[in-house]
Length: 598
Picture 1 (tube, rainbow, N blue to C red):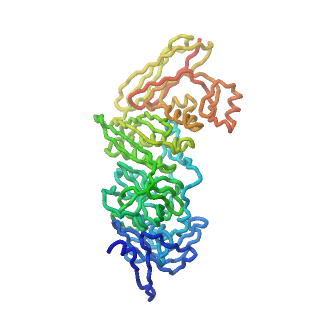
Picture 2: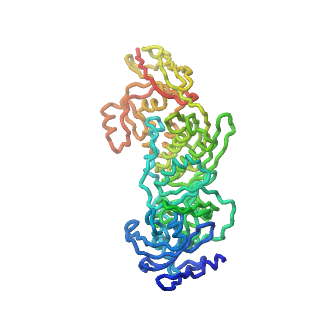
Picture 3: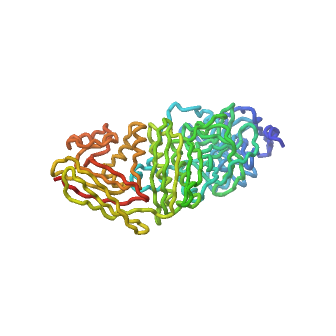
């Protein structure tokens, strides 16, 4: 039977002794609409969906009633019982969301919710079509950064001031959208599945990118459709069903994908490999096809988009080199721009890349170098090292989290959040934990005069092999009053950050422009650095991320209490000298010494 004949065929069945005729309009025509006021319990209808391949099938249903305010004020939901062999076998299927529902040839809405788990009947919720038609073409509100990102991506661990947190969740979404996944390492999937589930994405199902199978020329109601979140060497796409095509406008899903409002997600064709029945929740295993447009709105009533649009994505290029592999392997990805998804998706693809060959999956050391490129031609530069060991998170996950946290600082900023053009990174992996412990630091004298040359000797021990090494710092004493007491410090990145009054962290949080934010991110101390600094007591404050030492104590206290100053606390000292020595490995530990000026 041809698709055109299938579309025009009248489906008949006996119910209560009456012969009912249910028709679906031809696929090329915009169907008439049935308003919610005309929907009654006992009405018979059907919906269109695909269970295998791209063949649309009709499934009968009976309207049970209307649940007023189900999804919020004015957000009523039509409740229906699905009937027929498919409903008995698989029930309400994840991936069916958006399937158009018709009564007497009129479009009622989109199948969108499964009402209950382990239910003995297939009870579904239907989003009224008028709610979907009311989805705006565009929002008048500009997109903003996601303030909730810092719960998962706090900035302090970048400076070694706090440990990296466990994943932080948010309220679980009501409706789940199945994910088509290709190229995912199982261990990474297990780690990130709960995180994306809190955003309404799941279950995850292994799938492949389409290899050129033919599709009908036009996208029509009942067709599978995908919102592609990640493309390239890893595919991650939320899949559902088309509800309505009106010219170049497409409506789908009947519930939010991640409830992100304005979006720019590639819209792609999809093919159903198989529908997997399960008492815990049936789902469609799908394959992502060619891109045909872009989804531009993600609202309570569903997705809306346009055919022919091209999404603006974040390009990610990663080169990974293991021991003895100087050339390495190159991976390319494309990630959607989204206040809520871009950062965790970047973390996911980086973790997946690093764990693809079991490198960095346990202990060892990962060196990361690269840049986050912004549209104003500025770049945030990353140069860091991460170690992982027994009992702790794998080095690969820590390295991915580090880069994602730098990216999150951009995403949370009102100046930069949607201006990242691309990410270029190089990861170099060493199977051995390269950790250097600071054993001791010695000053060659306790007193010195202006013009004298003082020397600090630092002893370091390899945490794994026990080898000792020594570093030496030299400094010429400036012209300072006799009796001045100086603090000489040597240590890791965290100790350096504390000695500076955490001005680096304050600069991130208080950056008042894109330029300041980029400068602050690029100046994050490296875990590979052995730092040497000299400070003297000098009360001051941190104002808009910038240190202001040497203020009279009373002035410093007053200004630190001024809520409009955006200060982040008091400074106890000013640094007269700072020096970094970049070593091979991650440095840990610190020592403080005292020098008196004669």
